[in-house]
Image (cartoon, rainbow, N blue to C red; front, side, top):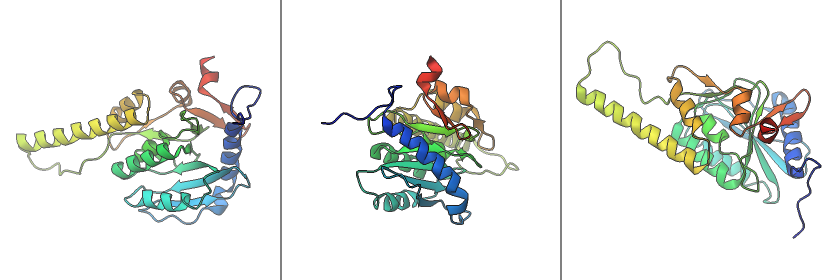
Length: 238
């Protein structure tokens, strides 16, 4: 088997291609992006000219059916091509976010959080699932991107009435079950346990934004689109 070409710094050549594809996609997103319905994500391909990598975009609210949309688009891509998934979403359905994340993880798709409104809530479940063909984590946060975590919303309860102990116990049980599911999913995609802490640290109507320091410390790549420099977690540790 022919060995994979590597750069002088030891990283696979494919990683450099991911960076170039992400930069090209970012430059063309504004012109290429179709209008996005308020309550559904759009999944589409951005043509960057790269012969080895196909760049897809998931933009908008994550709702049931988005996994099927992503699968339909990615099914048209030849198996020999690697996929980069650009993310721009305020979140949405936790169940759908986890389902998309599982698909991204299984298909070994690289994820990129782009500059813009952000990748929040359920979108982060997709983002953290990114990995490369060697089954290593490959999540890229563009410099200035807003990657935000917060607690999921169970339901909105009126504040002008009294609730029984049974109501409170049921709500607590639902919340605990949600935490267990997120924790199990993070373990499944080998995400650092600290991400669960970030999810729990902000109420649903608030947000915990991931800064570049913590991103690198927790195994996420950071890319400066102005200088085209990719800082790796290994660079940070050195």
